[in-house]
Length: 193
Image 1 (cartoon, rainbow, N blue to C red):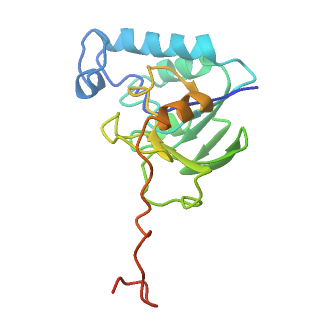
Image 2: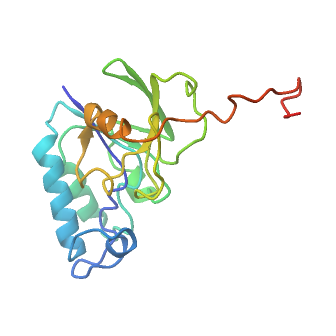
């Protein structure tokens, strides 16, 4: 069993025959919504196996319109799918038969403690330990991240789910995390002097 990660696929967030919506907003290399949906789904099917875990850090779909098409796409994707709810995950998406659905996911994967959320945080449970990583989406590669916290959106990592080893290799190229509390003394009430 392998655990795979991704964020922000935004399935259906473009017209079937035009490069608009998320294709235009995020500069995705697709000529239409149909091509985007098919390419991303094919990438997932090529990597994820039935007994694998697929963790999606939000924005699985947006403006799907047709609930049957959304369900058909969802059912065609292998693996036990977990949704960490994003701002575009409306009722249609949340009502799909996810193996798990959360606002924030705390997990241990390959001996690494993870905090997975749709939105990035400056501090998270365990953030003062370099062995606890935060994985997020939402920014489509516009927020650089650091060696403990990074955007796992498909716009950043190749329009396909990735393993934790790939994420760690990407994080190693980023600057170190600077703890906002390091180097400063706080008064008893928590306010800087």
